[in-house]
Amino acid sequence: MKRAYAAVAAAALAAAAVPMVAHAQQQTDPNAKAEFVGAIKAGKKKATLKVTYSCNAGQALWVSAKESASGKKDRRLRKEGSSKTASAWWQSHRNAFVCDTQPHTARFSIDKVEKGSKGKLKDGIAWVQFCVTNGDDLVLSGSDWVRVRT
Image 1 (cartoon, rainbow, N blue to C red):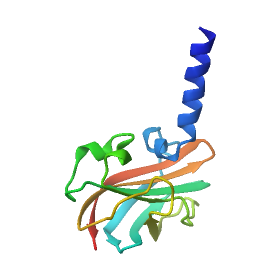
Image 2: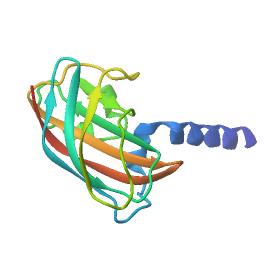
Image 3: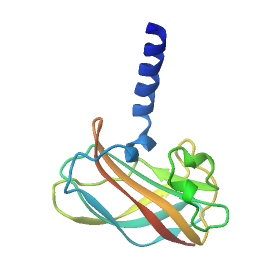
Image 4: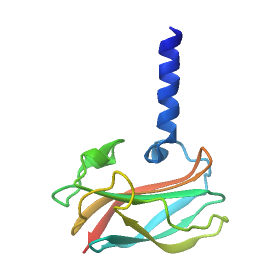
């Protein structure tokens, strides 16, 4: 019984360390929000997304876009672990951001530099996630379908 409990606890800790899990948690800042402004502008190696956001604190930002092979909405992309079924998955944890309770509008880059990223974004619709964390707390979680323009 102790082994089973230890295995479950270890799995839970490992899952908590994965940044893609952040969007499944309840956000701790009820006033935090993100609004995607316009389309993702995708090139061969980098894409940008304009976001208006506000949050009260944050140490890390993760931005992700997943697209189906057809470029059309695919509800499966909204599910946890769907990066495996996505034809294209671009992301970044490397963008600068500011959390000071004020609204900010900025362009954020995503690409295929980080492990697991893949494919080519094309004209269509992508499922986008924008998550800010502060330590283990999810401060802001925004997600929606966003048009991709190449």
